[in-house]
Image (tube, rainbow, N blue to C red; front, side, top):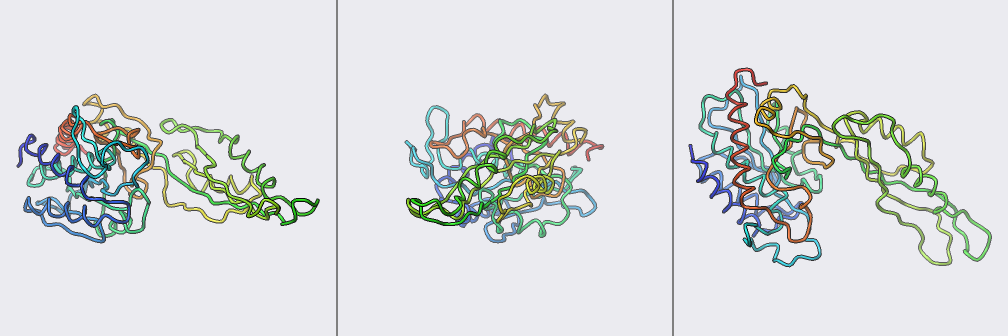
Length: 360
């Protein structure tokens, strides 16, 4: 079993390597190969499908439940305003700068280190699978969705995302609606036609003001936000259609299907496109892993942001070094001490959970 200090050093080096290899969502070939080699260098047999890689612990026992360790290695595009080169890992004043350093490079390399730490152990209550997956930022079909059937039964998952090493025990789901209000074209100088923009306004106002009556204890209210709108082709033509997009964050009180049904009952615009597969997720507050986290004085919370948790059909938590508010920002960074502490806390959490006789 590798020492924690040694794994912390290796994790930092791996994170620097990942930063230096562009891995925009859907274009993660270089980082997938580097992660594969990293595990192989530790004598671990690795599987790959598309740009997803995964491995099982040495003493995998089909009679035991399985715990999935998962994080992603894709990134968003480079935001405006970077003062550092986003692909040159740079350490200044205890911070490691680079695209993907915080989201989700630090959680990913920490979980890789933790997987290696437990890889040879024979006294664990659960099997371990480490999956470093692609296309999380774009919810792509070649990401975790493509490999979950290959992994077999998953009984529990720890998803690595930057949470300040606080434990998210619930997460909002996501539904994106693309809607269209229909009008009738006409000349702007004449009193003809039906302006689709004005026909859309009551629906836009409804999305802005409607409140679902019940709120989730952990996740708060359902949140609906109109984020894009498009109408018209020329200044002198009354637009015959107005398209708009609504970002909807659902909760464990109102799932995606129920929210969609309510929307259909209240708006006149046509719903052109929606997706229902990114459901809200949660783990029971009396689950063994949550109990262990609280025994270690970890703060638990409900997360407003989405991750691959939404696609894992098993109880799951989200936790990792770094801070969510740094994600997708210019000059993204993670503190070096956050990386070191993240590995230590992951190990403390899993050591206590995986060696408890009553862990479930």
